[in-house]
Amino acid sequence: MENKYSVVIQPREIIDPVRTMKEDLGEKIGWFNSKNSLAHITIFEFTSEKSQLDKTIQKLFKVCDTFTPFYVNLDHFDSYDNGAFFIGVNENPKIPAKSIIKRTPKTSTISNIKKRKTNEELNLKIIMKKTQDSVGIKNIKKSTQPHVSIARKLTPENLKIASELFTIIDITFLCKEIILREFDPIKKQFFAIETFPFGSNPQPELIQGSLF
Image 1: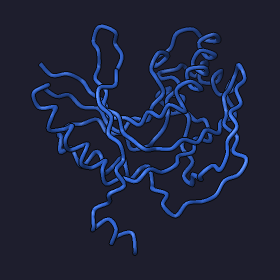
Image 2 (image 1 turned 30 degrees about the vertical axis):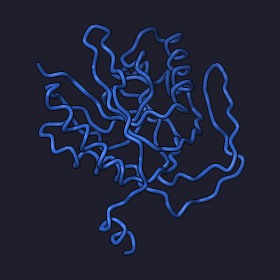
Image 3 (image 1 turned 180 degrees about the horizontal axis):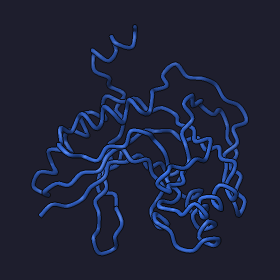
């Protein structure tokens, strides 16, 4: 029997602020898709027999060992035509020298007092693509645009409510690991089963390619 799995980025820094936003939205519109899901950035989803899962786990450990931790900044809200309301990723994240967390009943932000650019900054989309390619699994459900979902399948009316409720966001986190989650068909939620830390050991060809 095949089980459903997802590979995600799920930093602790975003879980509580996004949970608060989902609760605030729920007070306005009631239940919605993804209301109880912990905040994350999906890389890909797949199905697999448990007997084959170890091979995928080893491949994920191997590719993550080549990645170097980098900062990601979430700085805007947006939506898709399918009714998804989400937090978008800043294409030019910066390292915060110091941060202050500010929370209100309707939004959560991290305001950076001072920031500086890093030469070691890696592109989130590249990390996602390399992870997807590394596992060699056919028919995986890939995510190409990194984002953190607040809600899915909202009606146009509820999308309007969400966009008016949440207008400002500024959260920065250190992307230092990838997480493998398994779907629980009874609870109908994904739960983490393995963590793959970034090892900062890039392959020689990656080092050479970065020079050009």
